[in-house]
Length: 107
Image: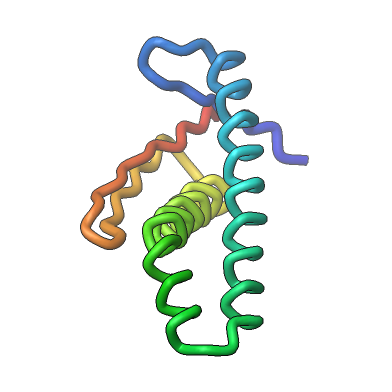
């Protein structure tokens, strides 16, 4: 049995506050995903190029932000799963935004 513990930290936040904030962010991301799915459905149902272009003009930023958030979530989850010792820092650039996160493990 693996007795390693994951220690979460963020400047100015306790572990409990960080977990609470993470839950809020996860819920927000889930709801954002539902909206992006709805936009995709509207695009599939659009019958003219103009309708699709108008939908894209309205929701392009939302869809881009969702892709960035999901990519970051994937990276931090992978870092958590594959981190084996010490602390691991991941930096990635997605659509011009540089994101950095640390996964700290206590052995």
